[in-house]
Length: 567
Image 1: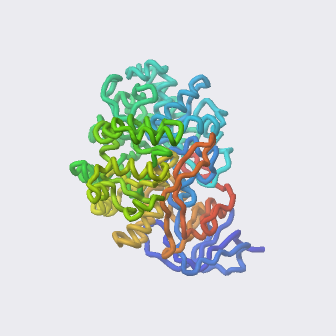
Image 2: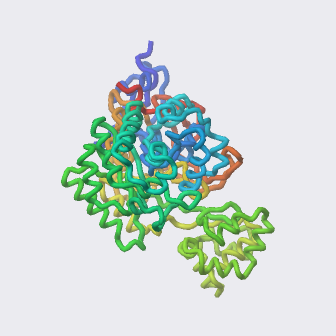
Image 3: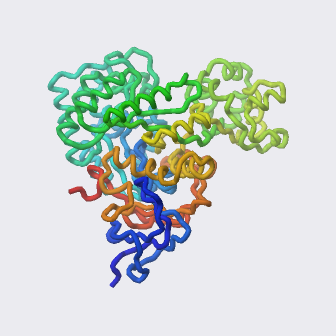
């Protein structure tokens, strides 16, 4: 009888620890790595020939919103086909548990507002066979998955559960008894296997009438936006009692001193986001990197999560995206192509596009004509509308509208993300303790498909620009996030670790352009990006992707406490 279920033979092993690569075989039995070295082919039931290929740990994505998508998409695309083998859900304090039955619809409407996931998709795709957070974990566990999942406890549902909707929305300061109940519910969820807690705090504590950066569907703030520092402290203290788990917190009203205090009180790591190399931010991201470096030097485990992806964001007046404000939203909402074209021809609408939609106005100079089906404009593909407008002596918005009309709304437009420059992206890669990615997987479905960030990191920053080594890249993409988030049995290829493994052709590794597909429950639309070069992706020792095609094997697991079958 064979000693191993499978051996990956003759590959170049980059183990995710930062150690030098080595040519070796990797043997797997019962989903666990059982040998790394020289393993005779006859000792395994199956042999994968990895000659000339890279063998590395699967990527671990700590910032996703696959809380709903896990129930209808086992591969969590775009992530799964791009080498992501484990994800953390429930980020930013948004999620679906605990939620009482009469609050389910509101929870879905809120997720649509803050993460742009169609309500129709959530209504059709989610089983809602839970109320409490432990019951939600059970539901995720029994759902077929090709990717591992570890959820945070999102704080918005906790606040609504304990305070009631009106008081949570009003920014009420919880009583001592209510803080105790919040801590009890978090402890209950942690005992059941949750990874920690998350909150996005973009407003002023207790002020529901302040300026909102990201509001709920009814114009009110999300409860965590106006939550009190005392509540964050109570949740950190609850983690201290657990002695495990981690925090994901972001907020414009939280000081660096408070973040550090949360870590001191909780004794647990904190993931801070987001570090974005925005060239128009006045160097804010550089100041945050210096703070994070200071935390590292002082032994304070606060880790920044960086938006390292620079894939284009697709835009189409036919499908939507980019802005949810009038007049752009007015055009999106028109029911027919003819109605949309009439609006694009309307001088008043064009004037508004040029002047009154700040987000659209902010982005259109960077928008490029990716593809047109009209000969008149074909020569301008690849140029920005600002460049085209200069050549034609027309305003860029007028050019965008005219091309779109000529194409019958089929024009494909790309715009950049967050005004990132190549120099700025290099700064994110250069600081070795920044977590790459911030994919937001499962959210903003019409504009983002950044679950391919690991592929991009290797293709662009290792292979093309040579900013970092392959060893360092795999440590940043797997070993470091595993350490930050408490994944105790994966992230590094070693004997005894879970066999979450990617086998890829370094020279052929690639990612495509964003494309629109209608594959969501309810017939809704999203963007996806295809992968190329992944010969095999293994999750818990079973092949889920082979030659860039899903195998239909759903070997992903709910990682209670950050590991399979926790002990």
